[in-house]
Length: 292
Image (cartoon, rainbow, N blue to C red; front, top):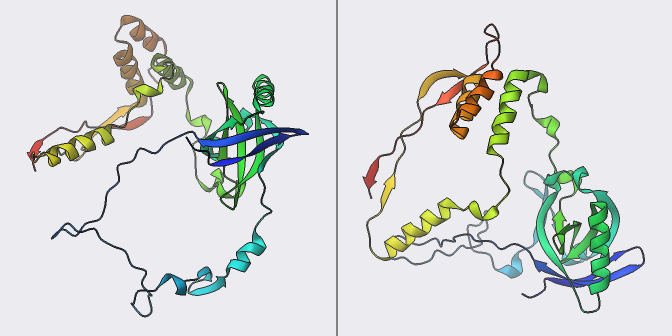
């Protein structure tokens, strides 16, 4: 696989030649917009809102809207004046602990593959970072744009993740979240038991894109001229309330299916005069078959 970027990782006076290669691949089903009468692809035009006429590329400029309907026009020279100095290095500025980084900072992962002559220094940095449980934070310029980047150890590889800058994250204080004082000890005990019962070793291959698989079945069936059957769920109905403890207890019994879970749930029951907080119970949607 071709390299996206070639350069080096530097920390201190150590220089490691590397190549940046993709670590993920998109697997989306894409569609074209068609004219329903003759199946011709739809073409989008660049129309002037004032004149309603198509505008050629040589008459298009970039503008920053600082007020509604008011723009500052930017030229190529303006962008050159703001450009940071081009560099072929990823300078590690700091090493930080993994748990100190909000996961919202991380955006797109890439493999850092050692270039010829950089294998030993690569392995040395990897071992040092792994032993320290550290993430290297630095900056990289890719496609003329500067990015914040985090370098972490994943197995035998160094993985660079493009990161968001702090101003791109929404401050949690803008939302309201419930406090821990809303949780009672009995509810917490049963919730922890439920989490323990559902805990498994992470196996990513067991999680598949069900929608994509079903969509491809529909596409393949239509290609063969078959009629498509689809399921239309009923609207959800309010069937009353059920207390939180009962929902937790039923979840435990359903998950384990044994007397042990029932005995554990019984131990976590609150006193009779300590009523549980009611929550809404949603009805399971029934399935109807219709023919398209």
